[in-house]
Length: 136
View 1 (cartoon, rainbow, N blue to C red):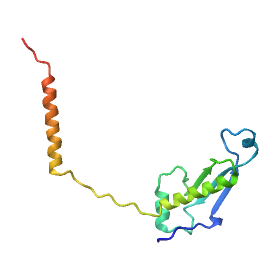
View 2: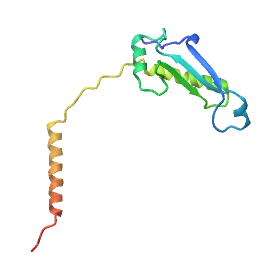
View 3: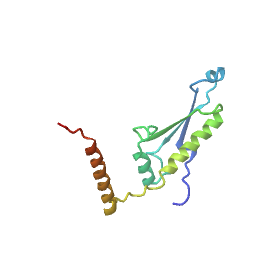
């Protein structure tokens, strides 16, 4: 599994829409924004492990049906937005390729515990010294 995952063109669905935000007359006339859809749940090019990791991510771009939706409208040209969407798709799929390293639980050392308790004791004596005393 050292090679990169390649996704065939027919598994991707692109739709071109008008970009939001500033841009003058050009933004009202030209559909430069790209909405790229990739069905993670039904993709035959992903292994079962990668598919499970990608679907388990809590990413707002993944729908309940397991479809990844990427909106790219950073650039002024349709071609550059297409390229941007595909780069972001590649980064997302790449992030699911590697299994996360399991966390190993650790305990504080005896010396660390002693330092913590000493610091607490010292702080306590400082605060006790500040206490209001009744000097009758």
